[in-house]
Image 1: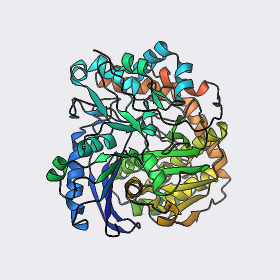
Image 2: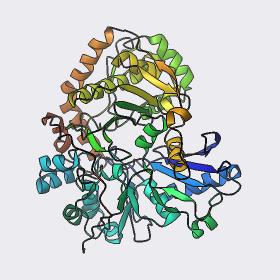
Image 3: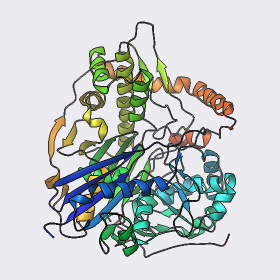
Image 4: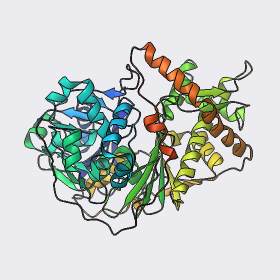
Length: 533
């Protein structure tokens, strides 16, 4: 086993990344494939899921020289919760609807709340329905793409698709299933068969397991088709990227908070009991006995890329330098980062990006500074929401491409007052996937040994940020109706009606109720409900 090489693969919003590691955590190679999602229809953010497999094949081919005998084990993760409708053989029948940035199913949220009761959905699944939920997207396909739905027999997320193509197994991890509201019972760790039959008739649901469990082995067929694959090599069940990212830096212990700086910002807090908040996402963790409360912005890194392109493709280094010179408050500029609607904690798919305070004297550095500060204000809003749910992080660990910008992460600490730990390696989810894969072969050391903390970003006191944060919260409340009206006009200009934004915008007004603390629940056996069409 000493010469064994494992492969970790993560399919993200803007790229797929793979890393080859030895069993003691040594990095042998890293490879990346970039891609784009389809945003051509208002409210829809989709992607051809076949690209996920094609990129996986290319990454295996590139990294195969590091594993002359073939990869000894494989771990996978991907953006989610994502809904890719597939036929019985696991071939896509429609472009996949991505996670909460895809807001197509807002009307279906209302329909399912009417059918099952919003409070009952929250009680059984630890989350209210939102654009993050998978269930309403099943209903959307049934109503708006009946031809594709009629051809569907299964569904996949990025990790489960790779696992299926590699092993033939049809399996999903409990964490991902926990975001398939209203179809998953959080207390019993199983699908709710009656709801699955009503919401997704004709669909066979995958068996459930934990992220690091063995899903199966690489088949001879897959090994013959893809360089670097070894028949019989074990493959993990896998999970959603943010949770694999948390694992990559060891942020999965009770009291940990992971901040993932990516195309979107995601925050995951880990507890030893069920925890929920009406404007956040509650779900099981990566292993039995762990529970998470999570939130995510609709955009974060995506806005910095937009600003860079808007400014003629300026380099991030030069923009960051100019932003640093601008100073706290961006010389009177304030931005709402809701450029693609917003997920948590406002749950408003009709929210829109807002830049307030512009004058002809503002510079590109001011604009970029306001962009970075808007992410900090959004993180502060999330931290306040975690506190409302009774979560005070023991420590916070930052990870993702955004941490390579010293100013970006520093501003988040300055605005929130939150110290952030940085680990030696910030590859991300694929690194966590590789560690889980290594665990199928041998006892692996904890991530703190593989990837120790090397630096802490300490907050720099800046009194102005308290007042600016108050204005940030006030700006949304003051302009929400205008944002919704403009969103409706944008949608109408594209020939598509805008769904009723109230289906999610009212969720934060619900009361905060904490579920009873309970002992860890043993996972139920395979439960694969299916109903006739």
